[in-house]
Length: 563
Image (spheres, rainbow, N blue to C red):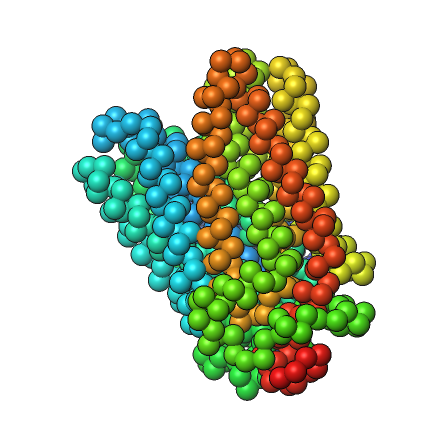
Protein backbone atom coordinates (compact mmCIF):
# COMPACT_ATOMS: atom_id res chain seq x y z
CA UNK A 1 0.00 0.00 0.00
CA UNK A 2 2.88 2.35 0.67
CA UNK A 3 3.94 1.98 -2.92
CA UNK A 4 0.47 2.82 -4.17
CA UNK A 5 0.40 6.08 -2.21
CA UNK A 6 3.55 7.29 -3.93
CA UNK A 7 2.13 6.83 -7.42
CA UNK A 8 0.90 10.13 -8.91
CA UNK A 9 -2.88 10.23 -9.29
CA UNK A 10 -2.69 11.25 -12.94
CA UNK A 11 -0.86 7.99 -13.73
CA UNK A 12 -3.38 5.62 -12.06
CA UNK A 13 -5.68 5.51 -15.09
CA UNK A 14 -2.82 4.47 -17.34
CA UNK A 15 -1.78 1.72 -14.90
CA UNK A 16 -5.29 0.30 -14.42
CA UNK A 17 -6.10 -2.84 -16.43
CA UNK A 18 -8.66 -2.27 -19.21
CA UNK A 19 -11.12 -4.66 -17.54
CA UNK A 20 -11.33 -2.31 -14.52
CA UNK A 21 -12.04 0.93 -16.39
CA UNK A 22 -15.82 0.69 -16.47
CA UNK A 23 -18.45 0.02 -19.09
CA UNK A 24 -16.56 1.90 -21.77
CA UNK A 25 -14.32 -1.19 -21.90
CA UNK A 26 -17.15 -3.70 -21.70
CA UNK A 27 -16.97 -4.39 -17.98
CA UNK A 28 -20.05 -5.49 -16.03
CA UNK A 29 -18.30 -5.14 -12.72
CA UNK A 30 -20.05 -2.82 -10.28
CA UNK A 31 -17.69 -0.65 -8.28
CA UNK A 32 -19.32 1.45 -5.54
CA UNK A 33 -16.88 4.27 -6.40
CA UNK A 34 -17.66 4.13 -10.11
CA UNK A 35 -20.28 6.33 -11.75
CA UNK A 36 -20.19 4.38 -15.00
CA UNK A 37 -22.17 1.35 -13.72
CA UNK A 38 -25.96 1.09 -13.44
CA UNK A 39 -27.70 3.02 -10.68
CA UNK A 40 -30.61 1.79 -8.64
CA UNK A 41 -33.69 3.89 -8.07
CA UNK A 42 -32.61 4.59 -4.49
CA UNK A 43 -29.28 6.12 -5.51
CA UNK A 44 -29.14 9.91 -5.21
CA UNK A 45 -29.13 11.77 -8.54
CA UNK A 46 -25.75 12.84 -9.87
CA UNK A 47 -25.33 16.60 -9.34
CA UNK A 48 -25.11 18.63 -12.53
CA UNK A 49 -22.23 21.08 -12.96
CA UNK A 50 -23.37 24.65 -13.29
CA UNK A 51 -21.90 27.05 -15.82
CA UNK A 52 -20.18 28.84 -12.93
CA UNK A 53 -18.47 25.61 -11.83
CA UNK A 54 -17.32 24.94 -15.38
CA UNK A 55 -16.00 28.50 -15.73
CA UNK A 56 -14.23 28.27 -12.39
CA UNK A 57 -12.66 24.97 -13.37
CA UNK A 58 -11.49 26.39 -16.70
CA UNK A 59 -10.10 29.50 -15.04
CA UNK A 60 -8.30 27.44 -12.43
CA UNK A 61 -6.74 25.25 -15.10
CA UNK A 62 -5.59 28.32 -17.05
CA UNK A 63 -4.06 29.89 -13.95
CA UNK A 64 -2.33 26.63 -13.09
CA UNK A 65 -0.90 26.34 -16.58
CA UNK A 66 0.29 29.97 -16.47
CA UNK A 67 1.94 29.39 -13.10
CA UNK A 68 3.73 26.28 -14.34
CA UNK A 69 4.88 28.05 -17.49
CA UNK A 70 6.19 30.96 -15.41
CA UNK A 71 8.03 28.62 -13.06
CA UNK A 72 9.59 26.86 -16.04
CA UNK A 73 10.77 30.19 -17.47
CA UNK A 74 12.15 31.55 -14.20
CA UNK A 75 13.75 28.28 -13.07
CA UNK A 76 11.58 26.89 -10.28
CA UNK A 77 8.93 27.73 -7.70
CA UNK A 78 11.28 29.31 -5.15
CA UNK A 79 13.00 31.51 -7.72
CA UNK A 80 9.64 32.54 -9.17
CA UNK A 81 8.38 33.57 -5.75
CA UNK A 82 11.40 35.79 -5.11
CA UNK A 83 11.47 37.36 -8.59
CA UNK A 84 7.73 38.08 -8.72
CA UNK A 85 7.73 39.56 -5.21
CA UNK A 86 10.65 41.90 -5.91
CA UNK A 87 9.12 42.88 -9.27
CA UNK A 88 5.85 43.67 -7.47
CA UNK A 89 7.68 46.01 -5.09
CA UNK A 90 8.98 48.11 -8.00
CA UNK A 91 5.63 47.84 -9.81
CA UNK A 92 3.85 49.32 -6.80
CA UNK A 93 6.07 52.38 -6.72
CA UNK A 94 5.76 52.92 -10.47
CA UNK A 95 1.98 52.47 -10.41
CA UNK A 96 1.68 55.08 -7.67
CA UNK A 97 3.49 57.75 -9.70
CA UNK A 98 1.51 56.94 -12.86
CA UNK A 99 -1.78 57.05 -10.97
CA UNK A 100 -1.21 60.62 -9.84
CA UNK A 101 -0.66 61.68 -13.44
CA UNK A 102 -3.62 59.68 -14.75
CA UNK A 103 -5.91 61.14 -12.07
CA UNK A 104 -4.71 64.73 -12.62
CA UNK A 105 -8.02 65.97 -14.05
CA UNK A 106 -10.08 64.49 -11.21
CA UNK A 107 -7.63 65.81 -8.59
CA UNK A 108 -7.86 69.30 -10.08
CA UNK A 109 -11.63 69.26 -9.89
CA UNK A 110 -11.92 67.54 -6.52
CA UNK A 111 -9.32 69.59 -4.63
CA UNK A 112 -9.54 72.79 -6.73
CA UNK A 113 -5.86 72.80 -7.70
CA UNK A 114 -3.92 73.51 -10.91
CA UNK A 115 -1.25 71.78 -12.99
CA UNK A 116 1.55 73.25 -10.89
CA UNK A 117 0.07 71.59 -7.81
CA UNK A 118 -0.13 68.24 -9.64
CA UNK A 119 3.52 68.55 -10.60
CA UNK A 120 4.36 69.43 -7.00
CA UNK A 121 2.70 66.23 -5.74
CA UNK A 122 4.97 64.13 -7.95
CA UNK A 123 8.15 66.20 -7.62
CA UNK A 124 8.07 66.52 -3.83
CA UNK A 125 7.46 62.81 -3.38
CA UNK A 126 10.33 61.99 -5.75
CA UNK A 127 12.68 64.47 -4.08
CA UNK A 128 11.97 63.14 -0.60
CA UNK A 129 12.42 59.59 -1.85
CA UNK A 130 15.77 60.47 -3.39
CA UNK A 131 17.09 61.96 -0.16
CA UNK A 132 15.66 59.14 1.99
CA UNK A 133 17.26 56.46 -0.20
CA UNK A 134 20.66 57.21 1.38
CA UNK A 135 19.71 56.51 5.04
CA UNK A 136 17.66 53.54 3.90
CA UNK A 137 20.75 52.29 2.07
CA UNK A 138 22.55 52.28 5.42
CA UNK A 139 19.75 50.23 6.99
CA UNK A 140 19.74 47.80 4.06
CA UNK A 141 23.43 47.05 4.65
CA UNK A 142 22.88 46.40 8.35
CA UNK A 143 19.43 44.95 9.07
CA UNK A 144 17.15 42.17 7.83
CA UNK A 145 16.09 43.38 4.39
CA UNK A 146 12.94 41.33 3.84
CA UNK A 147 11.48 42.54 7.13
CA UNK A 148 12.46 46.15 6.38
CA UNK A 149 10.72 45.96 2.99
CA UNK A 150 7.66 44.28 4.48
CA UNK A 151 7.17 46.95 7.15
CA UNK A 152 7.69 49.88 4.79
CA UNK A 153 5.36 48.47 2.10
CA UNK A 154 2.63 47.91 4.70
CA UNK A 155 3.12 51.48 5.90
CA UNK A 156 2.90 52.57 2.26
CA UNK A 157 -0.51 50.87 2.01
CA UNK A 158 -1.75 52.71 5.08
CA UNK A 159 -0.54 55.99 3.59
CA UNK A 160 -2.42 55.25 0.35
CA UNK A 161 -5.63 54.82 2.31
CA UNK A 162 -4.87 58.10 4.08
CA UNK A 163 -4.45 59.72 0.64
CA UNK A 164 -7.99 58.72 -0.22
CA UNK A 165 -9.32 60.30 2.96
CA UNK A 166 -7.79 63.79 2.67
CA UNK A 167 -9.99 66.84 2.29
CA UNK A 168 -7.47 69.43 1.12
CA UNK A 169 -4.41 69.77 -1.09
CA UNK A 170 -2.20 70.50 1.91
CA UNK A 171 -3.16 67.24 3.57
CA UNK A 172 -2.55 65.30 0.36
CA UNK A 173 0.85 66.94 -0.05
CA UNK A 174 1.86 65.88 3.48
CA UNK A 175 0.79 62.31 2.79
CA UNK A 176 2.73 62.31 -0.49
CA UNK A 177 5.85 63.50 1.33
CA UNK A 178 5.50 60.58 3.75
CA UNK A 179 4.91 58.19 0.84
CA UNK A 180 8.08 59.37 -0.86
CA UNK A 181 10.00 58.64 2.34
CA UNK A 182 8.77 55.08 2.94
CA UNK A 183 9.06 53.95 -0.70
CA UNK A 184 12.72 55.03 -0.86
CA UNK A 185 13.75 51.66 0.58
CA UNK A 186 12.77 49.81 -2.60
CA UNK A 187 15.83 50.57 -4.75
CA UNK A 188 18.60 49.77 -2.23
CA UNK A 189 16.80 46.73 -0.79
CA UNK A 190 15.99 45.15 -4.17
CA UNK A 191 19.56 45.64 -5.41
CA UNK A 192 21.07 44.07 -2.29
CA UNK A 193 18.65 41.12 -2.31
CA UNK A 194 19.24 40.38 -6.00
CA UNK A 195 22.97 40.26 -5.33
CA UNK A 196 22.56 37.76 -2.49
CA UNK A 197 19.73 35.65 -3.90
CA UNK A 198 21.15 34.98 -7.38
CA UNK A 199 24.57 34.03 -8.79
CA UNK A 200 26.50 36.66 -10.70
CA UNK A 201 26.33 35.02 -14.13
CA UNK A 202 22.55 35.51 -14.40
CA UNK A 203 21.92 38.77 -12.55
CA UNK A 204 21.32 40.66 -15.79
CA UNK A 205 18.54 38.26 -16.75
CA UNK A 206 17.05 38.39 -13.26
CA UNK A 207 17.13 42.18 -13.27
CA UNK A 208 15.33 42.08 -16.62
CA UNK A 209 12.46 40.15 -15.06
CA UNK A 210 12.30 42.41 -12.02
CA UNK A 211 12.48 45.69 -13.95
CA UNK A 212 9.65 44.44 -16.14
CA UNK A 213 7.52 44.79 -13.04
CA UNK A 214 8.43 48.48 -12.89
CA UNK A 215 7.26 49.01 -16.48
CA UNK A 216 4.10 46.95 -16.02
CA UNK A 217 3.31 48.84 -12.83
CA UNK A 218 3.53 52.13 -14.70
CA UNK A 219 1.12 50.79 -17.31
CA UNK A 220 -1.30 49.57 -14.66
CA UNK A 221 -1.22 52.95 -12.95
CA UNK A 222 -1.83 54.80 -16.18
CA UNK A 223 -4.52 52.64 -17.79
CA UNK A 224 -6.29 50.69 -15.01
CA UNK A 225 -6.23 52.90 -11.93
CA UNK A 226 -6.49 55.87 -14.30
CA UNK A 227 -9.86 54.54 -15.46
CA UNK A 228 -10.92 54.03 -11.87
CA UNK A 229 -9.84 57.59 -11.11
CA UNK A 230 -12.27 58.80 -13.77
CA UNK A 231 -15.01 57.54 -11.45
CA UNK A 232 -13.31 58.48 -8.16
CA UNK A 233 -9.70 59.44 -7.52
CA UNK A 234 -10.15 58.29 -3.92
CA UNK A 235 -11.09 54.80 -5.11
CA UNK A 236 -7.94 54.73 -7.27
CA UNK A 237 -5.73 55.30 -4.22
CA UNK A 238 -7.58 52.66 -2.19
CA UNK A 239 -7.25 50.22 -5.08
CA UNK A 240 -3.44 50.54 -4.93
CA UNK A 241 -3.43 49.95 -1.18
CA UNK A 242 -4.83 46.42 -1.57
CA UNK A 243 -1.81 44.89 -3.36
CA UNK A 244 0.50 46.75 -0.98
CA UNK A 245 -0.70 44.68 1.97
CA UNK A 246 -0.52 41.45 -0.06
CA UNK A 247 3.08 42.22 -1.11
CA UNK A 248 4.00 43.08 2.47
CA UNK A 249 2.69 39.75 3.68
CA UNK A 250 4.57 37.88 0.98
CA UNK A 251 7.80 39.69 1.82
CA UNK A 252 7.40 38.65 5.42
CA UNK A 253 7.39 35.02 4.32
CA UNK A 254 10.53 35.26 2.18
CA UNK A 255 13.69 33.78 3.66
CA UNK A 256 16.42 36.34 4.24
CA UNK A 257 19.55 35.32 2.29
CA UNK A 258 22.96 35.53 4.00
CA UNK A 259 25.18 38.41 2.97
CA UNK A 260 27.44 37.50 0.06
CA UNK A 261 30.59 38.40 1.98
CA UNK A 262 29.74 35.86 4.68
CA UNK A 263 27.96 33.17 2.70
CA UNK A 264 31.10 31.07 2.23
CA UNK A 265 31.00 30.13 5.91
CA UNK A 266 27.87 28.09 6.79
CA UNK A 267 28.27 29.02 10.45
CA UNK A 268 27.54 32.65 9.66
CA UNK A 269 24.22 31.97 7.94
CA UNK A 270 21.15 33.49 9.54
CA UNK A 271 19.89 30.85 12.00
CA UNK A 272 16.32 31.95 11.28
CA UNK A 273 16.75 30.64 7.75
CA UNK A 274 17.47 27.13 9.04
CA UNK A 275 14.75 27.35 11.68
CA UNK A 276 12.05 27.96 9.12
CA UNK A 277 12.74 24.65 7.45
CA UNK A 278 11.54 25.81 4.07
CA UNK A 279 13.58 23.21 2.27
CA UNK A 280 15.21 25.86 0.10
CA UNK A 281 18.92 26.41 0.64
CA UNK A 282 18.88 30.18 0.45
CA UNK A 283 22.34 30.16 1.93
CA UNK A 284 23.53 29.74 -1.66
CA UNK A 285 22.33 31.77 -4.60
CA UNK A 286 19.06 30.62 -6.14
CA UNK A 287 20.25 28.63 -9.12
CA UNK A 288 17.98 27.22 -11.78
CA UNK A 289 16.57 23.83 -10.83
CA UNK A 290 16.75 20.60 -12.75
CA UNK A 291 13.00 20.17 -12.27
CA UNK A 292 11.46 23.66 -12.41
CA UNK A 293 7.90 22.40 -12.06
CA UNK A 294 8.69 20.77 -8.76
CA UNK A 295 10.43 23.88 -7.47
CA UNK A 296 13.00 21.79 -5.60
CA UNK A 297 16.35 23.47 -5.15
CA UNK A 298 19.16 20.90 -5.17
CA UNK A 299 21.90 21.46 -2.59
CA UNK A 300 24.66 23.63 -4.02
CA UNK A 301 28.35 23.12 -3.26
CA UNK A 302 29.76 25.55 -0.74
CA UNK A 303 31.52 28.42 -2.44
CA UNK A 304 35.07 29.17 -1.38
CA UNK A 305 34.73 32.69 -2.72
CA UNK A 306 32.02 35.26 -2.11
CA UNK A 307 32.68 36.77 -5.52
CA UNK A 308 30.76 36.79 -8.76
CA UNK A 309 31.71 35.03 -11.98
CA UNK A 310 32.87 38.29 -13.54
CA UNK A 311 35.11 38.95 -10.54
CA UNK A 312 36.52 35.43 -10.80
CA UNK A 313 37.20 36.03 -14.50
CA UNK A 314 39.11 39.20 -13.66
CA UNK A 315 41.15 37.35 -11.03
CA UNK A 316 41.92 34.47 -13.41
CA UNK A 317 42.99 36.94 -16.10
CA UNK A 318 45.44 38.57 -13.68
CA UNK A 319 43.72 41.96 -13.69
CA UNK A 320 45.34 44.13 -11.03
CA UNK A 321 43.01 45.88 -8.59
CA UNK A 322 43.34 49.50 -7.50
CA UNK A 323 45.20 49.04 -4.21
CA UNK A 324 44.03 52.42 -2.89
CA UNK A 325 40.38 51.31 -3.10
CA UNK A 326 40.68 47.86 -1.51
CA UNK A 327 38.62 47.87 1.69
CA UNK A 328 40.44 46.13 4.53
CA UNK A 329 37.87 46.64 7.29
CA UNK A 330 34.17 46.04 7.80
CA UNK A 331 32.29 48.32 5.35
CA UNK A 332 29.28 48.38 7.66
CA UNK A 333 31.28 50.54 10.06
CA UNK A 334 31.83 53.24 7.46
CA UNK A 335 29.90 56.46 8.01
CA UNK A 336 27.64 57.77 5.30
CA UNK A 337 30.12 60.40 4.14
CA UNK A 338 33.00 57.91 4.08
CA UNK A 339 30.83 55.47 2.13
CA UNK A 340 29.76 58.20 -0.31
CA UNK A 341 33.38 59.24 -0.92
CA UNK A 342 34.37 55.64 -1.55
CA UNK A 343 31.44 54.94 -3.90
CA UNK A 344 32.19 58.06 -5.95
CA UNK A 345 35.91 57.19 -6.19
CA UNK A 346 35.10 54.03 -8.14
CA UNK A 347 35.45 55.32 -11.70
CA UNK A 348 33.13 52.79 -13.31
CA UNK A 349 30.45 53.61 -10.76
CA UNK A 350 30.64 57.30 -11.68
CA UNK A 351 30.31 56.32 -15.34
CA UNK A 352 27.26 54.21 -14.55
CA UNK A 353 25.66 56.96 -12.46
CA UNK A 354 26.12 59.61 -15.16
CA UNK A 355 24.91 57.28 -17.89
CA UNK A 356 21.91 56.16 -15.86
CA UNK A 357 21.00 59.76 -15.03
CA UNK A 358 21.09 60.71 -18.74
CA UNK A 359 18.95 57.73 -19.73
CA UNK A 360 16.36 58.28 -17.00
CA UNK A 361 16.34 62.02 -17.78
CA UNK A 362 15.28 61.28 -21.34
CA UNK A 363 12.88 58.48 -20.33
CA UNK A 364 11.14 60.75 -17.81
CA UNK A 365 10.70 63.39 -20.48
CA UNK A 366 9.14 60.80 -22.80
CA UNK A 367 6.80 59.58 -20.06
CA UNK A 368 5.73 63.13 -19.25
CA UNK A 369 5.31 64.62 -22.72
CA UNK A 370 5.29 61.57 -25.01
CA UNK A 371 1.51 61.48 -25.45
CA UNK A 372 1.36 65.19 -26.25
CA UNK A 373 4.29 64.91 -28.65
CA UNK A 374 2.67 62.04 -30.56
CA UNK A 375 -0.57 64.00 -30.95
CA UNK A 376 1.20 67.18 -32.08
CA UNK A 377 3.80 65.56 -34.35
CA UNK A 378 1.57 63.08 -36.17
CA UNK A 379 -1.82 64.81 -35.94
CA UNK A 380 -3.60 61.85 -34.33
CA UNK A 381 -6.30 61.81 -31.68
CA UNK A 382 -5.94 60.77 -28.08
CA UNK A 383 -7.14 57.21 -28.76
CA UNK A 384 -4.59 56.56 -31.53
CA UNK A 385 -1.86 58.28 -29.52
CA UNK A 386 -2.65 56.00 -26.59
CA UNK A 387 -2.41 52.93 -28.84
CA UNK A 388 0.97 54.15 -30.06
CA UNK A 389 2.13 54.55 -26.47
CA UNK A 390 1.02 50.96 -25.80
CA UNK A 391 3.16 49.76 -28.72
CA UNK A 392 6.07 51.76 -27.37
CA UNK A 393 5.49 50.22 -23.94
CA UNK A 394 5.58 46.73 -25.45
CA UNK A 395 8.92 47.55 -27.06
CA UNK A 396 10.21 48.78 -23.72
CA UNK A 397 9.20 45.53 -21.96
CA UNK A 398 10.87 43.40 -24.62
CA UNK A 399 13.98 45.56 -24.36
CA UNK A 400 14.36 45.19 -20.62
CA UNK A 401 13.98 41.40 -20.92
CA UNK A 402 16.44 41.08 -23.82
CA UNK A 403 19.04 43.51 -22.45
CA UNK A 404 19.76 41.52 -19.31
CA UNK A 405 20.04 38.27 -21.25
CA UNK A 406 22.40 39.83 -23.80
CA UNK A 407 24.73 41.11 -21.08
CA UNK A 408 24.80 37.72 -19.35
CA UNK A 409 25.49 36.00 -22.67
CA UNK A 410 28.49 38.25 -23.30
CA UNK A 411 29.89 37.42 -19.86
CA UNK A 412 29.45 33.70 -20.46
CA UNK A 413 31.46 34.08 -23.67
CA UNK A 414 34.39 35.42 -21.66
CA UNK A 415 33.90 39.20 -22.01
CA UNK A 416 34.55 40.72 -18.58
CA UNK A 417 33.14 44.05 -19.78
CA UNK A 418 30.29 42.42 -21.75
CA UNK A 419 27.51 44.12 -19.79
CA UNK A 420 29.03 47.56 -20.23
CA UNK A 421 29.47 46.92 -23.95
CA UNK A 422 25.83 45.88 -24.41
CA UNK A 423 24.62 48.99 -22.58
CA UNK A 424 26.87 51.35 -24.55
CA UNK A 425 25.81 49.94 -27.93
CA UNK A 426 22.14 50.08 -26.87
CA UNK A 427 22.48 53.75 -25.89
CA UNK A 428 23.96 54.69 -29.27
CA UNK A 429 21.28 52.66 -31.10
CA UNK A 430 18.58 54.48 -29.14
CA UNK A 431 19.74 57.87 -30.38
CA UNK A 432 19.98 56.75 -33.99
CA UNK A 433 16.52 55.16 -33.94
CA UNK A 434 14.86 58.22 -32.38
CA UNK A 435 15.98 60.56 -35.18
CA UNK A 436 13.69 59.31 -38.03
CA UNK A 437 10.45 59.62 -35.99
CA UNK A 438 11.38 63.23 -35.16
CA UNK A 439 11.79 64.07 -38.84
CA UNK A 440 8.57 62.52 -40.17
CA UNK A 441 4.91 63.39 -39.64
CA UNK A 442 3.59 59.94 -40.55
CA UNK A 443 2.55 57.85 -37.56
CA UNK A 444 2.78 54.63 -39.58
CA UNK A 445 6.36 55.40 -40.60
CA UNK A 446 7.40 56.52 -37.14
CA UNK A 447 5.91 53.74 -35.02
CA UNK A 448 8.44 50.95 -35.82
CA UNK A 449 11.35 53.31 -35.15
CA UNK A 450 9.89 54.55 -31.86
CA UNK A 451 9.14 51.02 -30.65
CA UNK A 452 12.69 49.92 -31.55
CA UNK A 453 14.15 52.98 -29.82
CA UNK A 454 12.16 52.15 -26.68
CA UNK A 455 13.52 48.61 -26.90
CA UNK A 456 17.14 49.76 -26.85
CA UNK A 457 16.48 52.51 -24.31
CA UNK A 458 15.28 50.07 -21.64
CA UNK A 459 17.73 47.33 -22.67
CA UNK A 460 20.47 49.29 -20.90
CA UNK A 461 18.92 49.19 -17.43
CA UNK A 462 19.14 45.51 -16.34
CA UNK A 463 22.66 44.98 -17.66
CA UNK A 464 23.91 48.16 -15.94
CA UNK A 465 22.22 47.20 -12.67
CA UNK A 466 23.96 43.82 -12.80
CA UNK A 467 27.31 45.44 -13.67
CA UNK A 468 26.95 47.77 -10.68
CA UNK A 469 26.89 44.83 -8.26
CA UNK A 470 30.16 43.51 -9.70
CA UNK A 471 32.13 46.70 -8.97
CA UNK A 472 30.98 47.17 -5.37
CA UNK A 473 31.84 45.17 -2.24
CA UNK A 474 28.70 43.25 -1.15
CA UNK A 475 28.40 45.00 2.21
CA UNK A 476 28.18 48.37 0.41
CA UNK A 477 25.45 47.41 -2.07
CA UNK A 478 22.65 49.17 -0.19
CA UNK A 479 24.48 52.47 0.31
CA UNK A 480 25.87 52.47 -3.23
CA UNK A 481 22.38 52.03 -4.65
CA UNK A 482 21.02 54.72 -2.33
CA UNK A 483 23.63 57.23 -3.52
CA UNK A 484 22.98 56.32 -7.16
CA UNK A 485 19.23 56.71 -6.63
CA UNK A 486 19.76 60.13 -5.10
CA UNK A 487 21.76 61.41 -8.08
CA UNK A 488 19.56 59.69 -10.66
CA UNK A 489 16.40 61.07 -9.09
CA UNK A 490 17.81 64.57 -9.30
CA UNK A 491 17.99 64.15 -13.08
CA UNK A 492 14.47 62.73 -13.15
CA UNK A 493 13.14 65.60 -11.07
CA UNK A 494 14.42 68.32 -13.43
CA UNK A 495 13.53 66.47 -16.65
CA UNK A 496 9.86 67.58 -16.87
CA UNK A 497 10.87 71.16 -16.09
CA UNK A 498 13.62 71.22 -18.74
CA UNK A 499 11.54 69.48 -21.41
CA UNK A 500 8.49 71.65 -20.74
CA UNK A 501 10.49 74.89 -20.55
CA UNK A 502 12.34 74.22 -23.80
CA UNK A 503 9.10 73.22 -25.54
CA UNK A 504 7.49 76.52 -24.45
CA UNK A 505 10.57 78.42 -25.61
CA UNK A 506 10.35 76.78 -29.04
CA UNK A 507 6.57 76.95 -29.27
CA UNK A 508 6.74 79.80 -31.82
CA UNK A 509 8.28 77.38 -34.35
CA UNK A 510 5.06 75.27 -34.31
CA UNK A 511 7.28 72.23 -33.76
CA UNK A 512 8.27 72.85 -30.16
CA UNK A 513 8.27 69.22 -29.03
CA UNK A 514 10.06 68.00 -32.18
CA UNK A 515 13.01 70.31 -31.62
CA UNK A 516 12.91 69.70 -27.87
CA UNK A 517 13.30 65.95 -28.29
CA UNK A 518 16.03 66.46 -30.89
CA UNK A 519 18.01 68.61 -28.46
CA UNK A 520 17.44 66.15 -25.62
CA UNK A 521 18.97 63.35 -27.70
CA UNK A 522 22.35 64.97 -27.05
CA UNK A 523 22.66 63.90 -23.38
CA UNK A 524 21.32 60.46 -24.32
CA UNK A 525 24.01 60.11 -26.96
CA UNK A 526 26.59 61.33 -24.46
CA UNK A 527 25.59 58.55 -22.09
CA UNK A 528 26.46 55.96 -24.76
CA UNK A 529 29.85 57.52 -25.42
CA UNK A 530 30.56 57.67 -21.67
CA UNK A 531 29.68 53.99 -21.27
CA UNK A 532 31.97 52.91 -24.09
CA UNK A 533 34.83 54.99 -22.68
CA UNK A 534 34.22 53.42 -19.28
CA UNK A 535 35.06 49.98 -20.64
CA UNK A 536 38.73 50.54 -19.82
CA UNK A 537 38.01 51.13 -16.10
CA UNK A 538 35.61 48.25 -15.56
CA UNK A 539 37.99 45.23 -15.28
CA UNK A 540 40.20 46.91 -12.66
CA UNK A 541 37.17 48.02 -10.62
CA UNK A 542 35.79 44.47 -10.77
CA UNK A 543 39.10 43.10 -9.50
CA UNK A 544 39.13 45.71 -6.71
CA UNK A 545 35.63 44.70 -5.56
CA UNK A 546 36.74 41.04 -5.53
CA UNK A 547 39.78 41.92 -3.41
CA UNK A 548 37.61 43.89 -0.99
CA UNK A 549 35.19 40.96 -0.72
CA UNK A 550 38.11 38.71 0.24
CA UNK A 551 39.05 41.10 3.04
CA UNK A 552 35.44 41.24 4.19
CA UNK A 553 35.58 37.48 4.70
CA UNK A 554 38.92 37.83 6.45
CA UNK A 555 40.63 35.18 4.31
CA UNK A 556 43.48 37.46 3.34
CA UNK A 557 43.29 36.63 -0.35
CA UNK A 558 43.19 40.16 -1.64
CA UNK A 559 46.92 40.25 -1.56
CA UNK A 560 47.74 43.20 -3.78
CA UNK A 561 48.02 46.01 -1.32
CA UNK A 562 49.27 46.76 2.17
CA UNK A 563 46.98 46.08 5.08
